[in-house]
Image (cartoon, rainbow, N blue to C red; front, side):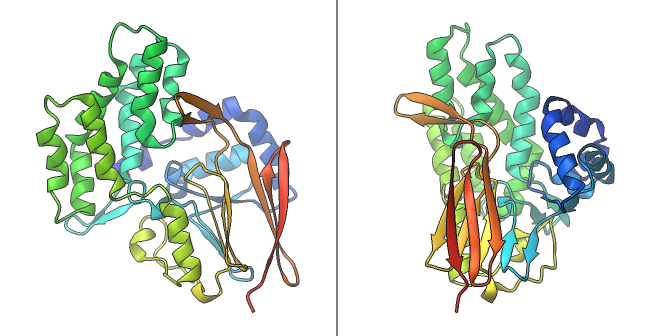
Length: 331
């Protein structure tokens, strides 16, 4: 069960992360001595929010930081949230029938594939493991086809990956996620279980992609933020499951939203006075451009300062470029 998994994790996980990133941890630790640092938790690091042992280990490694599910700054009218809360595949759900929280499908899928697929890549070129950095998800099959044209493995690695995904669809955890999110649509799970047998991998991938795209648009995060800022579409309780049940958010005076999750660094103005910022991700991203895959890593940052008449916002990529924008306060 997900609840047992959360509590079973110990501080070794934090130190395993610390070792290859010691320089970054040391820098943040130094900053924490002079500045107030707030850490907003998302879906992959959710365990830190509810496991005290992990919190203590993180603070020992990184300094006295504050750990939050999300932040709303009333004076600035600024909401800071990871963003998975607006993503059907990566948000938590409450199973009313069984009275328990169902973890995100995306997180479960990542752990399932990592445990059953990644171990079979140990003797293969390290580039194969880059599949986890492919964006969008629906291009993973193209990535495996690309590496199979470059290397001769002696077996079909795409077929192995798809079999792992298909086995996941037959798991009890996947069925629980379907029940919680589509209580009246059991056909969705049967769609895979009944129709995939003997199907060509290309058709299976098309089926998977078309089904998920119906419930997950690629610009879902920006679209949801736009409604939040311009149309006063309030945060729904089901979007905050697992994070908070009581958020005192002044929707009418909400000026901006800062998020992450999509790994796509973004600065977007809505009208003249509302803004959306996505911090991107400090990790490699593999994108298909034409017939090639391009790997890029951006160290993006954003500084938001309140001024007398509005907001001074600086965003950029460390060591490469920066841009400063003034956003006035609504009158």
